[in-house]
Length: 298
Image (cartoon, rainbow, N blue to C red; front, side, top):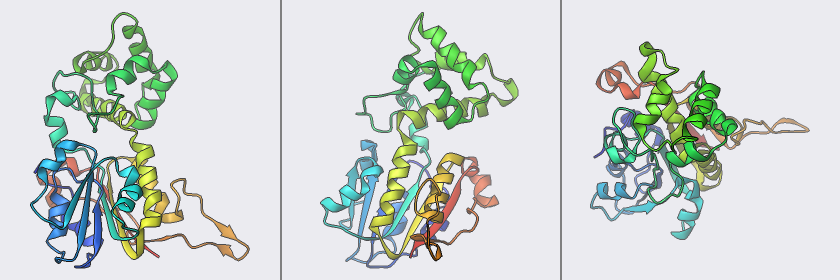
């Protein structure tokens, strides 16, 4: 297993699993959530596990009830249609990046070691982090750093990248860290580098648009009474999840007719997102930014 999932028991409880139901683990990863789900399913049930990292399939349990799908969860509706599944009883998505990706040096997710700037969840995707840094315009880079990493010096960093790539492509993590360090307070260095690398990763994998498409699809594929359980790790993700639950769309636009507000497709079961317990925080500091939201399909 890659890592112990964050808020494992809380997220599984949120699914309110029916023993003979059909469920989707949209972010299979190390398989921790899927194994817990399988413990509550009978022999008639089905579990679909999705992951765009093909290496994740090596974590599959030997169990005929689970079907692994190598792909992006944004296409969840198409995948289920292929297996003649119209409705499911629950969808779970843990949007965190597993420690496996940070530990695998050749993937370029971490700023702690020098490696090629990659950051692709799907190793067969065309665009990697080096492509973004060496081909995006100054404005595009500024938007990436500012919108996805909330970086205070986004414009200055974008200009620095542009100036350096004019001499030589920025292709490895050590060089990029060197550029970021010019504008970094040493006291907050690790946090700032994490924000910058997060921004690049989100852009490379088109994570915001992919999540929006997954959530929109859940409006259609989750059966009445079914559950949507999502663990997010930064404000952009959490806002999208909050909006879909509140209004049925990721923009958060509530619908009205002549008689007043139209009821959305979801009932929120977590008025405020659940956070990791003190006990979990002491065991796993990576759980600190996690926010868990649970909703039930009307």
